[in-house]
Length: 130
Image 1 (cartoon, rainbow, N blue to C red):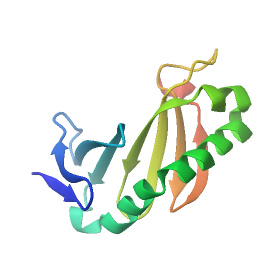
Image 2: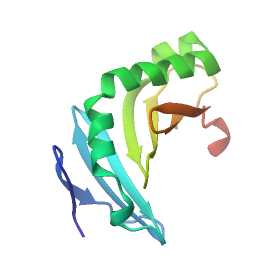
Image 3: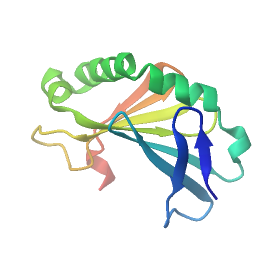
Image 4: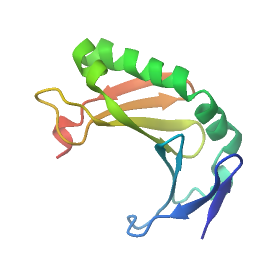
């Protein structure tokens, strides 16, 4: 099943998502954008206006995410954080993962910044996720 968002067009379904999870991806401004729906939620539980609003405000929110990374993990980590990926869930839960972080002690999984709406709720270096 395809999924469309205003301003992004049609998102491609991702094969191999875990049971109970439907995922679509696209790129916007050179960055990966993913939308996830986990059962029992449906696409009707997504907030397309919120998603497009976040993407329209991406530069400010990237700065907010980098500031949160600097506070949690240090300025050097924030400065090396690159390759942002946006993942949206139902409602206004979303995450921004910096897929590249060239600091010692970090894994290839990068750094995850969790948002509720426009507020950061967590920063995770994903070191324990392997």
